[in-house]
Image (cartoon, rainbow, N blue to C red; front, side):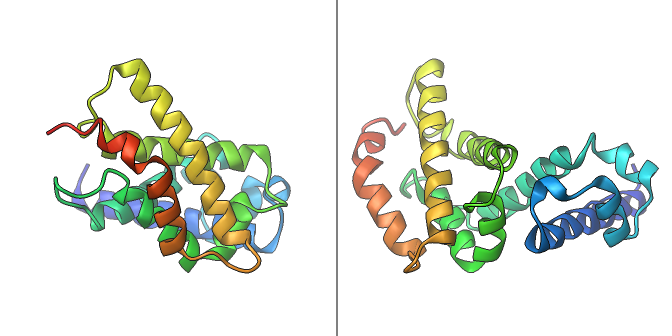
Length: 187
């Protein structure tokens, strides 16, 4: 793919993602249609379906890429805590509570909850696979446990009253499970 075509694809997917997030801030996810997204983004139906199967796929793919870039931008060294990528996710929830409230708040759907958990699991897998000395099945169980826990914390940050800070939430998580993970770090 040429650089120009690649740039067009990135621009189109960005427009679609932004349109979906804006609509999620205005109404419940289950009420949003692909047509609503297309109208907001000013993108054609065939262009949408060339990149995504449906709105769930748009949410999962574009949000995962966004989170992956955010975590990658805060990449940590080999001596950093294994949960350092989680802090980036918590910080994003604290900085964008309205988005995370739409994703994980009281009015969100099971589809959103599972999509967000899948995004978090993918990022944790990428960030922790080489760092933790575990059998594959134990690693998979650890990522599942962590991803559900992180999703709960993201929702708590976005929907808490009084608000939780990313720093306090991360420190609590690190005290709770950090010592167990530290024992499994590859040296």
